[in-house]
Length: 164
Image (cartoon, rainbow, N blue to C red; front, side):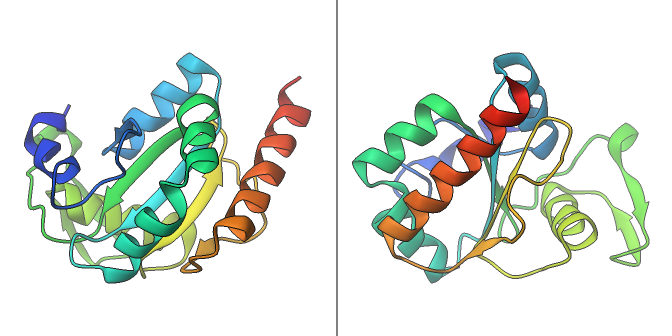
């Protein structure tokens, strides 16, 4: 829904090259149900150097990028710099934020804070299409591609075990 407004984020400024990203949490959930795949929820920030490092040194490594492209839905959720208004029918009062959520950034921050109990970036969570966690803990800043790939494989194995 907001992809045209966010399209610039995937070209030259930030993004995960060659990986199809969903910029809205609910869109990623719908895609996961449709394609029967787990979701990598990546809370990021345009101004977050750690997020750019994770993208460059970990997520874009060939084996990891290929696995993300073929086996996962990637939700790339920004917590800063993108003040895109959401339709009034989707706006709501957030008890976590203590204010009305009227834009995509606040919605992402509210989801990160109220659902995942954190508000820092980068933070990566793996869930199924019912929003169940597939890993006991989040994956925070750690630019070690071997460690991340091991984590990714564990998540995928758990998802496949549960769903087959």
